[in-house]
Length: 284
Image 1 (cartoon, rainbow, N blue to C red):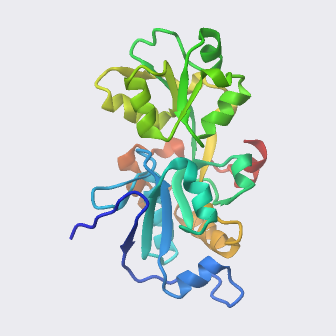
Image 2: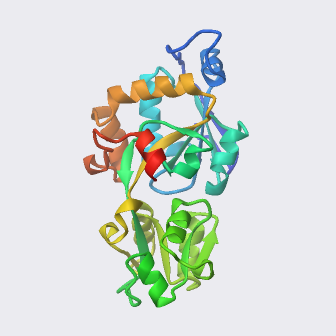
Image 3: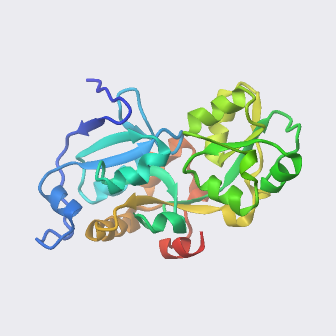
């Protein structure tokens, strides 16, 4: 049976679950609710191939796929989904509209002030989406500055901070709601280049029928490579600990790769043995 989901609505997927960790009265609120049989609520924006809803409202994208593998390892198969605009994901989590963010969020110091992150699920870079042939020769933020180009990106994206850090003037920045609006701005010629995740830019190229191309992520500043984690409320520390313990058992394994590979995630995106959320929060 097909299930329907409109943006901001919830989809309940039934299944038996039991969170074995921290079943005591002193556990955090999320752990208590899950142990009481309530579904865990996944929050994400539409950002192909990271996370997006399917035709029936099911959670698609490699971050959702990875999160579900970890949750299953924890014994959790009962969940709901909430689809939101990117800029509203952290406020929505803080407002208790969902329990974890599975949208593919980079672990950044500014975000760590507001939410917790799981251990990293992967290492990723950004790139520029430019017209085919790259007529203005834009490969990075400095090229945007020197050419006077208009650069579009998503409000709340990490690329806003990155562009500001690289010195891109506000007058050359166009902020839109998310991935769909980025492509619309490029198609309409309102922007000369877009900056977004490499995966997101690749998806736009595939949809553009040859109108655009993606620059090499290696042309971007090295510090813009970022680790991605699953976002959680600061208060849900017991759940975070249990989630990280389960992830350590499955990361890079058969179930993990089988779930994420259809969306373009490969072993090259694995976070690395030395990756840590503590480091990312302090240095990104």
